[in-house]
Length: 627
Image (cartoon, rainbow, N blue to C red; front, top):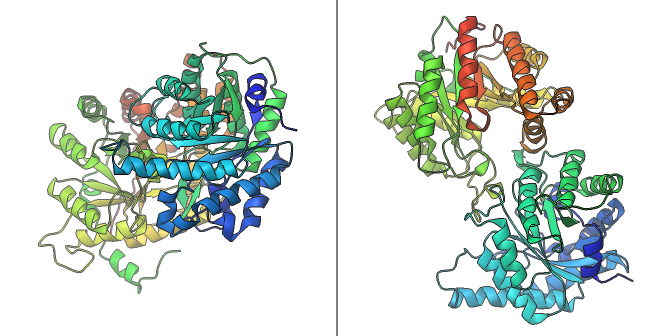
Protein backbone atom coordinates (compact mmCIF):
# COMPACT_ATOMS: atom_id res chain seq x y z
CA UNK A 1 0.00 0.00 0.00
CA UNK A 2 1.46 3.37 -1.03
CA UNK A 3 1.59 6.04 1.68
CA UNK A 4 0.09 9.48 1.09
CA UNK A 5 2.34 11.11 -1.54
CA UNK A 6 2.43 14.59 0.02
CA UNK A 7 3.31 13.21 3.45
CA UNK A 8 5.93 10.84 2.06
CA UNK A 9 7.69 13.48 -0.02
CA UNK A 10 8.13 15.82 2.96
CA UNK A 11 10.02 13.19 4.90
CA UNK A 12 12.34 11.64 2.33
CA UNK A 13 13.67 11.73 -1.23
CA UNK A 14 11.71 9.84 -3.87
CA UNK A 15 13.55 8.56 -6.94
CA UNK A 16 11.51 8.90 -10.14
CA UNK A 17 12.22 7.55 -13.62
CA UNK A 18 14.14 9.05 -16.53
CA UNK A 19 13.30 9.96 -20.10
CA UNK A 20 10.72 8.00 -22.05
CA UNK A 21 10.80 9.76 -25.43
CA UNK A 22 14.55 10.01 -26.01
CA UNK A 23 15.04 6.54 -24.50
CA UNK A 24 12.55 5.05 -26.95
CA UNK A 25 14.26 6.94 -29.80
CA UNK A 26 17.54 5.30 -28.78
CA UNK A 27 15.82 1.95 -29.23
CA UNK A 28 15.09 2.70 -32.86
CA UNK A 29 11.79 4.56 -32.83
CA UNK A 30 11.94 7.19 -35.58
CA UNK A 31 12.37 10.69 -34.08
CA UNK A 32 9.57 12.17 -36.18
CA UNK A 33 7.06 9.57 -34.96
CA UNK A 34 4.60 10.38 -32.22
CA UNK A 35 5.76 8.62 -29.05
CA UNK A 36 2.40 8.66 -27.29
CA UNK A 37 0.79 6.61 -30.09
CA UNK A 38 2.86 3.65 -28.85
CA UNK A 39 0.47 3.31 -25.89
CA UNK A 40 -1.91 1.80 -28.46
CA UNK A 41 0.42 0.72 -31.27
CA UNK A 42 3.13 -1.04 -29.23
CA UNK A 43 2.04 -1.18 -25.59
CA UNK A 44 4.57 -3.86 -24.64
CA UNK A 45 7.45 -1.59 -25.65
CA UNK A 46 6.15 1.14 -23.34
CA UNK A 47 5.48 -1.38 -20.57
CA UNK A 48 8.99 -2.83 -20.83
CA UNK A 49 10.45 0.69 -20.58
CA UNK A 50 8.57 1.23 -17.32
CA UNK A 51 9.89 -2.13 -16.08
CA UNK A 52 13.48 -1.14 -16.91
CA UNK A 53 13.16 1.98 -14.80
CA UNK A 54 11.69 -0.01 -11.91
CA UNK A 55 14.65 -2.41 -12.06
CA UNK A 56 16.95 0.61 -12.03
CA UNK A 57 15.40 1.79 -8.75
CA UNK A 58 12.57 4.15 -9.74
CA UNK A 59 9.77 4.47 -7.20
CA UNK A 60 7.69 6.81 -9.33
CA UNK A 61 6.77 6.26 -12.97
CA UNK A 62 5.50 8.91 -15.37
CA UNK A 63 2.92 7.94 -17.93
CA UNK A 64 3.86 8.10 -21.61
CA UNK A 65 1.42 10.97 -22.18
CA UNK A 66 3.56 14.12 -22.17
CA UNK A 67 2.32 15.29 -25.59
CA UNK A 68 -1.01 13.48 -25.56
CA UNK A 69 -3.33 16.47 -25.71
CA UNK A 70 -5.78 16.93 -28.57
CA UNK A 71 -3.96 19.94 -30.03
CA UNK A 72 -0.69 18.03 -30.43
CA UNK A 73 -2.21 14.70 -31.40
CA UNK A 74 -4.15 16.41 -34.18
CA UNK A 75 -0.91 16.89 -36.13
CA UNK A 76 -0.41 13.11 -36.07
CA UNK A 77 -4.00 12.41 -37.06
CA UNK A 78 -4.76 11.01 -33.61
CA UNK A 79 -6.99 13.68 -32.09
CA UNK A 80 -9.98 11.33 -31.93
CA UNK A 81 -7.91 8.88 -29.85
CA UNK A 82 -6.86 11.41 -27.18
CA UNK A 83 -8.78 9.77 -24.35
CA UNK A 84 -7.75 6.24 -25.36
CA UNK A 85 -4.05 7.16 -25.56
CA UNK A 86 -4.06 8.79 -22.12
CA UNK A 87 -5.99 6.01 -20.43
CA UNK A 88 -3.78 3.39 -22.06
CA UNK A 89 -0.71 5.30 -20.85
CA UNK A 90 -2.06 5.28 -17.31
CA UNK A 91 -2.97 1.58 -17.48
CA UNK A 92 0.50 0.56 -18.71
CA UNK A 93 2.31 2.48 -15.97
CA UNK A 94 -0.07 1.19 -13.27
CA UNK A 95 0.38 -2.40 -14.45
CA UNK A 96 4.16 -2.07 -14.21
CA UNK A 97 4.00 -0.20 -10.87
CA UNK A 98 1.97 -2.70 -8.91
CA UNK A 99 1.05 -1.70 -5.35
CA UNK A 100 4.30 -0.05 -4.21
CA UNK A 101 5.28 2.47 -6.88
CA UNK A 102 3.61 5.82 -7.57
CA UNK A 103 2.29 6.64 -11.02
CA UNK A 104 2.21 10.26 -12.17
CA UNK A 105 0.13 11.40 -15.11
CA UNK A 106 2.49 13.41 -17.34
CA UNK A 107 1.07 16.55 -19.00
CA UNK A 108 3.13 18.88 -21.16
CA UNK A 109 2.42 22.24 -22.82
CA UNK A 110 -0.48 22.52 -25.26
CA UNK A 111 1.64 23.32 -28.31
CA UNK A 112 0.10 26.79 -28.72
CA UNK A 113 2.35 29.85 -28.63
CA UNK A 114 2.10 31.75 -25.36
CA UNK A 115 1.33 34.38 -24.28
CA UNK A 116 -1.96 34.13 -26.13
CA UNK A 117 -3.16 37.38 -27.79
CA UNK A 118 -6.57 36.93 -26.14
CA UNK A 119 -6.55 34.42 -23.25
CA UNK A 120 -10.33 34.58 -23.04
CA UNK A 121 -10.81 34.10 -26.78
CA UNK A 122 -11.03 31.03 -29.00
CA UNK A 123 -7.39 29.99 -28.54
CA UNK A 124 -7.63 30.21 -24.77
CA UNK A 125 -10.77 28.12 -24.78
CA UNK A 126 -9.13 25.52 -27.07
CA UNK A 127 -6.15 25.17 -24.73
CA UNK A 128 -8.39 24.97 -21.66
CA UNK A 129 -10.51 22.27 -23.31
CA UNK A 130 -7.42 20.31 -24.36
CA UNK A 131 -6.01 20.28 -20.82
CA UNK A 132 -9.42 19.31 -19.39
CA UNK A 133 -9.80 16.38 -21.77
CA UNK A 134 -6.31 15.02 -21.08
CA UNK A 135 -6.40 15.52 -17.32
CA UNK A 136 -9.84 13.90 -17.03
CA UNK A 137 -8.60 10.85 -18.95
CA UNK A 138 -5.55 10.47 -16.70
CA UNK A 139 -7.57 10.91 -13.53
CA UNK A 140 -10.14 8.38 -14.73
CA UNK A 141 -7.23 6.10 -15.53
CA UNK A 142 -6.31 6.02 -11.84
CA UNK A 143 -2.98 7.89 -11.61
CA UNK A 144 -1.73 8.74 -8.10
CA UNK A 145 -0.68 12.29 -8.95
CA UNK A 146 -0.20 14.69 -11.86
CA UNK A 147 3.04 16.16 -13.17
CA UNK A 148 2.76 19.31 -15.28
CA UNK A 149 6.19 19.56 -16.89
CA UNK A 150 8.41 21.41 -19.35
CA UNK A 151 6.29 24.57 -19.25
CA UNK A 152 8.17 27.63 -20.51
CA UNK A 153 5.41 30.18 -19.90
CA UNK A 154 3.98 30.80 -16.45
CA UNK A 155 0.53 31.75 -17.72
CA UNK A 156 0.15 28.41 -19.52
CA UNK A 157 1.24 26.49 -16.42
CA UNK A 158 -1.23 28.41 -14.28
CA UNK A 159 -4.01 27.63 -16.76
CA UNK A 160 -3.22 23.89 -16.60
CA UNK A 161 -3.07 24.08 -12.80
CA UNK A 162 -6.45 25.78 -12.63
CA UNK A 163 -8.04 23.09 -14.80
CA UNK A 164 -6.41 20.34 -12.73
CA UNK A 165 -7.66 21.77 -9.46
CA UNK A 166 -11.18 22.21 -10.83
CA UNK A 167 -11.22 18.52 -11.76
CA UNK A 168 -9.67 17.15 -8.57
CA UNK A 169 -9.22 19.23 -5.46
CA UNK A 170 -7.21 16.65 -3.51
CA UNK A 171 -4.89 14.91 -5.98
CA UNK A 172 -1.21 15.95 -5.64
CA UNK A 173 0.05 18.13 -8.50
CA UNK A 174 3.73 18.74 -9.32
CA UNK A 175 4.38 21.88 -11.40
CA UNK A 176 7.70 21.95 -13.27
CA UNK A 177 8.95 24.77 -15.46
CA UNK A 178 12.02 25.19 -17.69
CA UNK A 179 14.62 27.72 -16.51
CA UNK A 180 17.40 27.88 -19.16
CA UNK A 181 19.02 31.12 -17.97
CA UNK A 182 20.49 30.88 -14.47
CA UNK A 183 17.19 30.19 -12.76
CA UNK A 184 15.07 32.31 -15.11
CA UNK A 185 12.61 31.43 -17.84
CA UNK A 186 13.33 32.33 -21.45
CA UNK A 187 11.11 35.39 -20.92
CA UNK A 188 13.22 36.42 -17.91
CA UNK A 189 10.89 35.45 -15.03
CA UNK A 190 12.71 34.39 -11.87
CA UNK A 191 12.19 30.80 -10.69
CA UNK A 192 11.21 31.95 -7.21
CA UNK A 193 8.47 34.19 -8.63
CA UNK A 194 7.14 31.34 -10.78
CA UNK A 195 7.27 28.89 -7.87
CA UNK A 196 5.30 31.24 -5.62
CA UNK A 197 2.65 31.74 -8.31
CA UNK A 198 2.30 27.99 -8.90
CA UNK A 199 1.88 27.28 -5.19
CA UNK A 200 -0.81 29.95 -4.94
CA UNK A 201 -2.58 28.33 -7.90
CA UNK A 202 -2.76 24.97 -6.14
CA UNK A 203 0.49 23.09 -6.84
CA UNK A 204 1.67 20.79 -4.02
CA UNK A 205 5.24 20.67 -5.31
CA UNK A 206 7.17 22.89 -7.73
CA UNK A 207 10.43 22.37 -9.54
CA UNK A 208 12.15 22.22 -12.88
CA UNK A 209 12.84 19.75 -15.64
CA UNK A 210 14.50 19.63 -19.06
CA UNK A 211 16.49 22.80 -19.84
CA UNK A 212 20.20 23.15 -20.43
CA UNK A 213 21.73 20.35 -18.39
CA UNK A 214 22.29 19.47 -14.77
CA UNK A 215 24.19 22.57 -13.64
CA UNK A 216 21.60 24.93 -15.12
CA UNK A 217 18.83 23.03 -13.38
CA UNK A 218 20.74 23.13 -10.09
CA UNK A 219 20.76 26.94 -10.34
CA UNK A 220 16.97 26.87 -10.65
CA UNK A 221 16.57 24.55 -7.65
CA UNK A 222 18.80 26.78 -5.56
CA UNK A 223 16.58 29.76 -6.40
CA UNK A 224 13.42 27.77 -5.65
CA UNK A 225 14.88 26.85 -2.25
CA UNK A 226 13.88 30.37 -1.23
CA UNK A 227 10.31 29.06 -0.96
CA UNK A 228 11.24 27.60 2.43
CA UNK A 229 12.14 24.25 3.91
CA UNK A 230 8.51 23.10 4.05
CA UNK A 231 8.09 23.29 0.27
CA UNK A 232 9.38 20.12 -1.42
CA UNK A 233 11.01 20.61 -4.81
CA UNK A 234 11.18 18.43 -7.94
CA UNK A 235 14.28 18.13 -10.16
CA UNK A 236 14.47 16.31 -13.51
CA UNK A 237 17.63 17.40 -15.40
CA UNK A 238 18.62 16.63 -18.99
CA UNK A 239 21.78 14.65 -19.65
CA UNK A 240 23.67 17.70 -20.92
CA UNK A 241 23.51 19.45 -24.31
CA UNK A 242 22.75 17.04 -27.14
CA UNK A 243 24.62 16.89 -30.43
CA UNK A 244 23.46 15.41 -33.72
CA UNK A 245 25.45 12.32 -34.76
CA UNK A 246 24.24 10.50 -37.87
CA UNK A 247 20.77 12.09 -37.55
CA UNK A 248 20.46 11.06 -33.89
CA UNK A 249 20.56 13.17 -30.74
CA UNK A 250 23.39 12.08 -28.45
CA UNK A 251 23.45 13.34 -24.86
CA UNK A 252 26.94 13.50 -23.29
CA UNK A 253 26.45 13.69 -19.50
CA UNK A 254 27.58 10.49 -17.82
CA UNK A 255 25.50 8.91 -15.05
CA UNK A 256 28.18 9.38 -12.33
CA UNK A 257 28.58 13.08 -13.07
CA UNK A 258 24.83 13.69 -13.11
CA UNK A 259 24.43 11.76 -9.86
CA UNK A 260 26.84 14.12 -8.11
CA UNK A 261 24.92 17.18 -9.32
CA UNK A 262 21.60 15.57 -8.36
CA UNK A 263 23.09 15.12 -4.88
CA UNK A 264 23.62 18.89 -4.77
CA UNK A 265 19.98 19.37 -5.80
CA UNK A 266 18.88 17.20 -2.90
CA UNK A 267 20.97 19.30 -0.52
CA UNK A 268 19.20 22.36 -1.94
CA UNK A 269 15.78 20.92 -1.18
CA UNK A 270 14.82 18.55 -3.99
CA UNK A 271 12.66 15.68 -2.73
CA UNK A 272 11.48 14.23 -6.06
CA UNK A 273 14.40 13.56 -8.41
CA UNK A 274 14.58 11.86 -11.77
CA UNK A 275 15.81 12.49 -15.29
CA UNK A 276 14.60 14.21 -18.42
CA UNK A 277 15.88 14.14 -22.03
CA UNK A 278 18.82 11.84 -22.61
CA UNK A 279 18.64 10.05 -19.28
CA UNK A 280 18.29 6.27 -19.18
CA UNK A 281 17.85 3.52 -16.58
CA UNK A 282 21.64 3.63 -16.14
CA UNK A 283 21.38 7.24 -14.96
CA UNK A 284 18.56 6.44 -12.55
CA UNK A 285 20.46 3.50 -11.11
CA UNK A 286 23.49 5.73 -10.51
CA UNK A 287 21.26 8.40 -8.90
CA UNK A 288 19.97 5.76 -6.48
CA UNK A 289 23.46 4.55 -5.59
CA UNK A 290 24.69 8.08 -4.98
CA UNK A 291 21.70 9.06 -2.86
CA UNK A 292 22.05 5.96 -0.70
CA UNK A 293 25.77 6.57 -0.23
CA UNK A 294 25.26 10.26 0.53
CA UNK A 295 22.19 9.95 2.77
CA UNK A 296 22.30 12.70 5.36
CA UNK A 297 20.00 15.31 6.94
CA UNK A 298 18.62 17.57 4.22
CA UNK A 299 19.36 21.29 4.32
CA UNK A 300 18.68 24.32 2.14
CA UNK A 301 21.29 26.40 0.42
CA UNK A 302 20.42 29.97 1.26
CA UNK A 303 17.25 29.13 3.12
CA UNK A 304 36.15 8.19 -47.06
CA UNK A 305 37.11 10.90 -49.65
CA UNK A 306 35.42 10.80 -53.07
CA UNK A 307 37.50 10.03 -56.15
CA UNK A 308 38.56 12.77 -58.54
CA UNK A 309 36.06 11.51 -61.10
CA UNK A 310 33.09 12.06 -58.78
CA UNK A 311 31.08 15.28 -58.77
CA UNK A 312 32.57 16.07 -55.36
CA UNK A 313 36.06 15.47 -56.72
CA UNK A 314 35.42 17.79 -59.66
CA UNK A 315 34.36 20.53 -57.25
CA UNK A 316 37.54 20.10 -55.22
CA UNK A 317 39.70 20.50 -58.31
CA UNK A 318 38.74 24.18 -58.51
CA UNK A 319 38.74 24.93 -54.78
CA UNK A 320 40.52 28.17 -53.93
CA UNK A 321 41.98 29.28 -50.60
CA UNK A 322 39.75 32.32 -50.21
CA UNK A 323 40.47 35.74 -48.74
CA UNK A 324 41.18 34.64 -45.17
CA UNK A 325 43.86 32.05 -45.91
CA UNK A 326 45.35 34.10 -48.74
CA UNK A 327 45.93 36.91 -46.27
CA UNK A 328 47.56 34.86 -43.52
CA UNK A 329 51.18 35.77 -42.73
CA UNK A 330 53.86 33.28 -43.71
CA UNK A 331 56.36 34.16 -40.99
CA UNK A 332 54.31 33.39 -37.88
CA UNK A 333 51.78 30.90 -36.54
CA UNK A 334 48.23 31.85 -37.68
CA UNK A 335 45.91 32.45 -34.70
CA UNK A 336 42.10 32.54 -34.80
CA UNK A 337 40.29 33.59 -31.61
CA UNK A 338 36.62 32.95 -30.91
CA UNK A 339 34.23 35.45 -29.34
CA UNK A 340 30.51 34.97 -28.82
CA UNK A 341 28.10 37.63 -30.07
CA UNK A 342 26.16 39.19 -27.17
CA UNK A 343 22.75 37.99 -26.06
CA UNK A 344 21.58 41.62 -26.22
CA UNK A 345 22.01 44.66 -28.48
CA UNK A 346 25.10 46.22 -26.86
CA UNK A 347 28.13 45.14 -28.94
CA UNK A 348 30.63 47.51 -27.33
CA UNK A 349 32.19 44.72 -25.26
CA UNK A 350 32.75 42.49 -28.30
CA UNK A 351 34.23 45.38 -30.30
CA UNK A 352 36.56 46.14 -27.38
CA UNK A 353 37.59 42.50 -27.24
CA UNK A 354 38.24 42.37 -30.99
CA UNK A 355 40.48 45.46 -30.72
CA UNK A 356 42.44 43.87 -27.86
CA UNK A 357 42.86 40.62 -29.80
CA UNK A 358 44.02 42.46 -32.91
CA UNK A 359 46.55 44.40 -30.83
CA UNK A 360 47.76 41.15 -29.24
CA UNK A 361 48.47 39.64 -32.65
CA UNK A 362 45.43 37.56 -33.56
CA UNK A 363 44.93 37.02 -37.29
CA UNK A 364 41.14 36.70 -37.22
CA UNK A 365 38.15 36.71 -34.89
CA UNK A 366 35.63 33.90 -35.22
CA UNK A 367 31.98 34.36 -34.29
CA UNK A 368 29.51 31.57 -33.56
CA UNK A 369 25.92 31.66 -34.78
CA UNK A 370 23.65 31.17 -31.76
CA UNK A 371 25.96 28.51 -30.26
CA UNK A 372 24.15 25.86 -28.19
CA UNK A 373 20.96 27.31 -29.72
CA UNK A 374 21.04 30.33 -27.39
CA UNK A 375 19.74 33.53 -28.99
CA UNK A 376 22.55 35.98 -29.77
CA UNK A 377 23.07 38.97 -32.05
CA UNK A 378 23.47 38.16 -35.74
CA UNK A 379 27.08 37.11 -36.27
CA UNK A 380 27.26 38.12 -39.95
CA UNK A 381 26.33 41.71 -39.11
CA UNK A 382 28.71 41.73 -36.16
CA UNK A 383 31.52 40.30 -38.29
CA UNK A 384 31.06 43.18 -40.72
CA UNK A 385 31.21 45.73 -37.89
CA UNK A 386 34.39 44.15 -36.53
CA UNK A 387 35.93 43.98 -40.01
CA UNK A 388 35.15 47.61 -40.77
CA UNK A 389 35.76 49.20 -37.35
CA UNK A 390 38.67 47.11 -36.04
CA UNK A 391 40.28 46.01 -39.29
CA UNK A 392 40.79 42.38 -38.31
CA UNK A 393 39.50 39.58 -40.58
CA UNK A 394 36.58 37.49 -39.36
CA UNK A 395 35.28 33.94 -39.62
CA UNK A 396 31.50 33.78 -39.28
CA UNK A 397 29.98 30.42 -38.38
CA UNK A 398 27.00 29.57 -40.58
CA UNK A 399 24.55 26.87 -39.45
CA UNK A 400 22.01 24.77 -41.31
CA UNK A 401 19.64 24.92 -38.35
CA UNK A 402 17.92 28.26 -38.79
CA UNK A 403 17.35 28.64 -42.55
CA UNK A 404 16.19 26.60 -45.49
CA UNK A 405 18.38 26.40 -48.59
CA UNK A 406 16.86 29.60 -49.97
CA UNK A 407 17.70 31.52 -46.79
CA UNK A 408 21.21 30.05 -46.64
CA UNK A 409 22.00 31.19 -50.17
CA UNK A 410 20.72 34.67 -49.40
CA UNK A 411 22.88 34.79 -46.27
CA UNK A 412 25.93 33.69 -48.25
CA UNK A 413 25.31 36.44 -50.78
CA UNK A 414 24.90 38.95 -47.95
CA UNK A 415 28.18 37.87 -46.35
CA UNK A 416 29.92 38.41 -49.69
CA UNK A 417 28.37 41.87 -50.10
CA UNK A 418 29.65 42.76 -46.61
CA UNK A 419 33.18 41.71 -47.54
CA UNK A 420 33.60 38.83 -45.10
CA UNK A 421 36.76 36.73 -45.32
CA UNK A 422 35.86 33.29 -44.00
CA UNK A 423 32.86 31.11 -43.18
CA UNK A 424 32.81 28.03 -40.98
CA UNK A 425 30.08 25.66 -42.19
CA UNK A 426 28.40 23.74 -39.36
CA UNK A 427 25.19 21.78 -39.02
CA UNK A 428 24.23 23.54 -35.77
CA UNK A 429 23.00 22.52 -32.33
CA UNK A 430 19.38 21.33 -32.01
CA UNK A 431 17.03 24.29 -31.58
CA UNK A 432 14.97 22.40 -29.00
CA UNK A 433 17.84 22.62 -26.48
CA UNK A 434 18.07 26.40 -26.59
CA UNK A 435 16.46 29.27 -24.74
CA UNK A 436 13.62 29.99 -27.17
CA UNK A 437 10.48 27.94 -26.42
CA UNK A 438 8.89 26.44 -29.51
CA UNK A 439 11.93 27.03 -31.75
CA UNK A 440 12.55 24.30 -34.28
CA UNK A 441 15.42 23.49 -36.60
CA UNK A 442 15.23 23.53 -40.40
CA UNK A 443 18.16 21.32 -41.49
CA UNK A 444 17.32 21.26 -45.21
CA UNK A 445 20.97 20.31 -45.58
CA UNK A 446 23.82 19.47 -43.24
CA UNK A 447 27.37 20.78 -43.12
CA UNK A 448 28.44 18.74 -46.18
CA UNK A 449 25.76 20.36 -48.33
CA UNK A 450 26.58 23.81 -46.97
CA UNK A 451 30.27 23.42 -47.80
CA UNK A 452 29.35 22.38 -51.33
CA UNK A 453 26.99 25.37 -51.60
CA UNK A 454 29.69 27.80 -50.45
CA UNK A 455 32.16 26.36 -52.93
CA UNK A 456 29.65 26.77 -55.76
CA UNK A 457 29.25 30.46 -54.84
CA UNK A 458 33.06 30.74 -54.78
CA UNK A 459 32.95 29.51 -58.39
CA UNK A 460 30.35 32.10 -59.35
CA UNK A 461 27.15 30.08 -59.51
CA UNK A 462 24.40 29.01 -57.14
CA UNK A 463 23.34 25.38 -56.54
CA UNK A 464 20.69 25.66 -59.24
CA UNK A 465 23.49 26.39 -61.74
CA UNK A 466 22.65 30.05 -62.24
CA UNK A 467 25.57 32.41 -62.86
CA UNK A 468 25.98 34.99 -60.09
CA UNK A 469 27.75 37.73 -62.13
CA UNK A 470 30.71 37.48 -59.80
CA UNK A 471 32.49 35.06 -57.50
CA UNK A 472 32.61 34.91 -53.72
CA UNK A 473 36.04 34.64 -52.13
CA UNK A 474 35.40 32.88 -48.84
CA UNK A 475 37.89 30.66 -47.11
CA UNK A 476 35.58 27.75 -46.35
CA UNK A 477 36.03 26.15 -42.95
CA UNK A 478 34.81 22.86 -41.50
CA UNK A 479 34.29 21.69 -37.93
CA UNK A 480 36.38 18.67 -36.92
CA UNK A 481 35.72 16.68 -33.74
CA UNK A 482 38.75 14.42 -33.34
CA UNK A 483 38.09 11.66 -30.82
CA UNK A 484 41.15 9.54 -30.02
CA UNK A 485 39.01 6.59 -28.93
CA UNK A 486 37.34 6.35 -32.36
CA UNK A 487 38.91 8.78 -34.85
CA UNK A 488 38.17 7.00 -38.13
CA UNK A 489 34.58 8.18 -38.54
CA UNK A 490 35.41 11.86 -37.98
CA UNK A 491 38.48 11.65 -40.24
CA UNK A 492 36.33 10.20 -43.02
CA UNK A 493 33.89 13.07 -42.51
CA UNK A 494 36.75 15.58 -42.75
CA UNK A 495 38.03 13.90 -45.93
CA UNK A 496 34.61 14.37 -47.47
CA UNK A 497 34.42 18.01 -46.33
CA UNK A 498 37.83 18.68 -47.90
CA UNK A 499 36.68 17.05 -51.14
CA UNK A 500 33.60 19.30 -51.17
CA UNK A 501 35.65 22.47 -50.84
CA UNK A 502 36.71 23.07 -47.21
CA UNK A 503 40.23 24.51 -47.00
CA UNK A 504 40.63 24.75 -43.24
CA UNK A 505 39.23 23.02 -40.18
CA UNK A 506 38.65 24.19 -36.62
CA UNK A 507 38.58 21.42 -34.03
CA UNK A 508 36.83 20.89 -30.75
CA UNK A 509 39.14 21.72 -27.80
CA UNK A 510 42.17 19.54 -27.14
CA UNK A 511 43.55 18.93 -23.66
CA UNK A 512 46.41 16.63 -24.59
CA UNK A 513 49.51 17.31 -26.66
CA UNK A 514 49.72 13.60 -27.47
CA UNK A 515 46.21 13.67 -28.91
CA UNK A 516 47.12 16.68 -31.08
CA UNK A 517 50.21 14.89 -32.41
CA UNK A 518 48.18 11.75 -33.17
CA UNK A 519 45.56 13.87 -34.96
CA UNK A 520 48.22 15.61 -37.08
CA UNK A 521 49.74 12.30 -38.06
CA UNK A 522 46.41 10.75 -39.03
CA UNK A 523 45.33 13.74 -41.12
CA UNK A 524 48.66 14.42 -42.83
CA UNK A 525 47.30 13.17 -46.16
CA UNK A 526 44.66 15.91 -46.32
CA UNK A 527 45.23 19.16 -48.21
CA UNK A 528 43.48 21.18 -45.53
CA UNK A 529 44.86 23.41 -42.76
CA UNK A 530 43.85 22.26 -39.29
CA UNK A 531 43.54 24.70 -36.39
CA UNK A 532 43.41 22.73 -33.11
CA UNK A 533 41.03 24.27 -30.58
CA UNK A 534 42.39 25.30 -27.20
CA UNK A 535 40.01 26.23 -24.40
CA UNK A 536 41.70 27.80 -21.35
CA UNK A 537 40.00 26.29 -18.30
CA UNK A 538 39.17 28.60 -15.41
CA UNK A 539 38.17 26.23 -12.58
CA UNK A 540 37.55 22.61 -11.64
CA UNK A 541 33.79 23.11 -11.90
CA UNK A 542 34.24 24.65 -15.36
CA UNK A 543 36.21 21.55 -16.42
CA UNK A 544 33.53 19.19 -15.06
CA UNK A 545 30.75 21.10 -16.78
CA UNK A 546 32.50 21.11 -20.16
CA UNK A 547 33.39 17.43 -19.95
CA UNK A 548 29.96 16.20 -18.93
CA UNK A 549 27.50 18.63 -20.47
CA UNK A 550 28.94 20.12 -23.66
CA UNK A 551 28.96 17.80 -26.68
CA UNK A 552 32.29 17.06 -28.31
CA UNK A 553 34.48 18.13 -25.36
CA UNK A 554 36.43 15.51 -23.44
CA UNK A 555 38.75 16.56 -20.62
CA UNK A 556 41.11 13.90 -19.20
CA UNK A 557 40.11 12.63 -15.78
CA UNK A 558 43.65 13.18 -14.53
CA UNK A 559 43.42 16.92 -15.31
CA UNK A 560 39.98 17.25 -13.72
CA UNK A 561 41.19 15.44 -10.60
CA UNK A 562 44.25 17.66 -10.43
CA UNK A 563 42.14 20.84 -10.52
CA UNK A 564 39.82 19.54 -7.82
CA UNK A 565 42.94 19.01 -5.69
CA UNK A 566 43.12 22.77 -5.12
CA UNK A 567 40.72 24.26 -2.58
CA UNK A 568 40.24 27.74 -4.01
CA UNK A 569 39.03 28.70 -7.46
CA UNK A 570 42.03 31.04 -7.75
CA UNK A 571 44.48 28.17 -7.22
CA UNK A 572 42.50 26.02 -9.67
CA UNK A 573 42.74 28.83 -12.20
CA UNK A 574 46.51 29.11 -11.74
CA UNK A 575 46.95 25.37 -12.24
CA UNK A 576 44.73 25.47 -15.33
CA UNK A 577 46.73 28.43 -16.73
CA UNK A 578 49.96 26.52 -16.24
CA UNK A 579 48.51 23.50 -18.02
CA UNK A 580 47.32 25.61 -20.98
CA UNK A 581 50.73 27.26 -21.40
CA UNK A 582 52.50 23.89 -21.29
CA UNK A 583 50.07 22.54 -23.89
CA UNK A 584 50.67 25.51 -26.18
CA UNK A 585 54.44 25.15 -25.85
CA UNK A 586 54.17 21.50 -26.87
CA UNK A 587 51.91 21.92 -29.92
CA UNK A 588 52.62 25.38 -31.39
CA UNK A 589 55.82 24.34 -33.23
CA UNK A 590 53.88 21.52 -34.95
CA UNK A 591 50.47 22.85 -36.00
CA UNK A 592 49.14 24.69 -39.08
CA UNK A 593 47.38 27.30 -36.96
CA UNK A 594 45.87 27.86 -33.54
CA UNK A 595 42.21 28.28 -32.60
CA UNK A 596 41.76 29.90 -29.16
CA UNK A 597 38.32 29.88 -27.54
CA UNK A 598 37.60 32.66 -25.06
CA UNK A 599 36.20 31.05 -21.86
CA UNK A 600 32.85 32.63 -20.97
CA UNK A 601 33.74 35.31 -23.56
CA UNK A 602 36.66 36.52 -21.41
CA UNK A 603 38.75 37.88 -24.24
CA UNK A 604 41.37 39.13 -21.76
CA UNK A 605 42.42 35.48 -21.27
CA UNK A 606 42.85 34.71 -24.96
CA UNK A 607 44.45 38.09 -25.67
CA UNK A 608 47.14 37.35 -23.08
CA UNK A 609 47.75 33.87 -24.53
CA UNK A 610 47.96 35.38 -28.03
CA UNK A 611 50.61 37.85 -26.83
CA UNK A 612 52.61 35.05 -25.26
CA UNK A 613 52.48 32.96 -28.43
CA UNK A 614 53.68 35.95 -30.44
CA UNK A 615 56.50 36.65 -27.96
CA UNK A 616 57.62 33.02 -28.24
CA UNK A 617 58.01 33.50 -32.00
CA UNK A 618 56.51 30.18 -33.05
CA UNK A 619 55.92 29.80 -36.80
CA UNK A 620 54.05 26.49 -36.65
CA UNK A 621 54.31 23.84 -39.33
CA UNK A 622 54.80 26.46 -42.04
CA UNK A 623 52.20 24.66 -44.13
CA UNK A 624 49.83 26.86 -46.15
CA UNK A 625 46.91 25.88 -48.35
CA UNK A 626 47.71 25.39 -52.02
CA UNK A 627 44.88 24.37 -54.37
